[in-house]
Image (tube, rainbow, N blue to C red; front, side, top):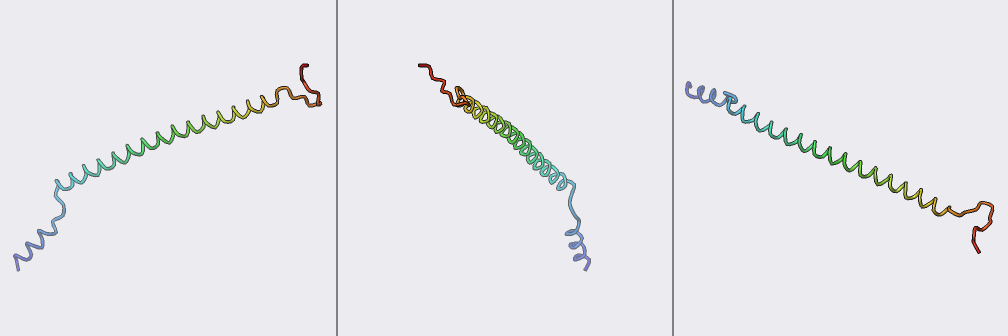
Length: 84
């Protein structure tokens, strides 16, 4: 009976300090990797957002220039501005 009690107690001792330290190191490494991945993705999102904003501003400027070029020489009273 005494031997069964000893075996049962040995099974329920819990974690050792070494096991806890290994688990802490592993979880710290995983956390650091996840955080660095988040930082990289956040930077990539910011860069992409800036690029999209610049492209949209370029499209707007080109459309305004196109409209102004098409309207160049337009006379609202209907007189043609043709040099003969």
